[in-house]
Amino acid sequence: MKFQRELLAIEKAEHESTFEQVDWRCEEINFALDGTSRCQVRIQYLMRSNLLQADAETTLCDCAELRANNRLVRYSLPSHSDLDEGEGIPVVMMFHGWTISSITSFRTEDDYYCQNNKVRVTQALLDAGYAVFAPSASALGDNQDGGDWAYWLTNIPGYDSLDNWTRSSDHQMLINLWSQLSRGLHGYKFNLNKMHATGFSSGGFMTSRMGFSYPGMFNSLSINGGSYYNCDGVCNRYLDEFEKELIDLHPPTQILQGATDPVVLASSNVDYDRELNRRDWITNRRVNREKVGHRWLDEAPELILDWIKRHNK
Image 1 (cartoon, helix red, strand yellow):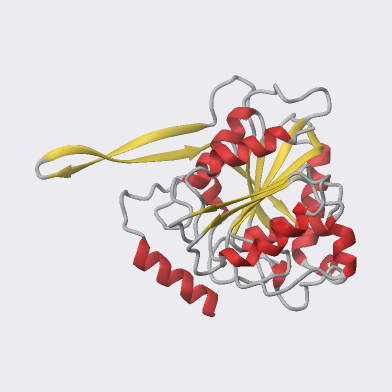
Image 2 (spheres, rainbow, N blue to C red):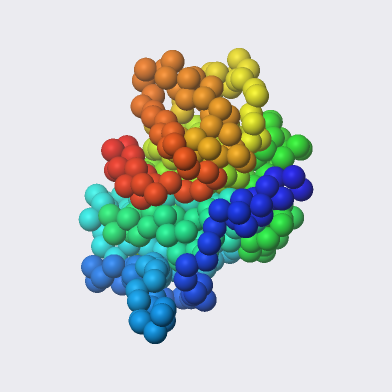
């Protein structure tokens, strides 16, 4: 696929390995309310010129797994309930990019797209008191975990409209997951009235889908390297009249974009931002970083946490 070839070319050309990838797994753990951070930071040391030097900082977050409509979902829960005002812990949905595993939400990746930025988003959210759920995409609708078929159906022909989305395995997975959360996990109660979404690349389009197909369900969206729910990386399209009515119901939305992104062009989300700007009742912002390609922005942890905290009402 052209998109996948472009991703591989970017990684080969722009990413230089700087550390040894840690084999980190999500296992059933005791999510106790003990105030201890769910994430740990490790420094890797390598021998260079006969000297032991600190080489890389890696972040690893405790996580567990569940199944939602036979789909793998990885998640982690905060170690305190400071944000629970009696209705439960607020929830953040995190959607990964094409070919990328959902484990990337919980460990530093030796790649170009996530690096240490994505897991630091998770760390910031957990430390603040949010639960993080990272479903695994599968175009086959099964237990996919990264690889060629790991992409969201939101902009795939056959599912890329508002009418036929409910037939998708992605929709069925989400409904099943939210039903499970409504019943609680590990003694936690979750507040689905305080739910947020963020995602990158294919997951960025999926994040937009949350605004269009589930109006009123999300308090905020943070789209990284993405655009309208049914766009591609060029996105030469505009909203139809019905979509313009739906976007009236959009939650506060921020778009995080690399100005030199060759996969999802910076121009692809300009109209999205423009439509949001026309609606003065919708809070929005677009951050376009110069000399940044197709990856999570370095400041994504701060920007996303700030956005979610501002709109967790």
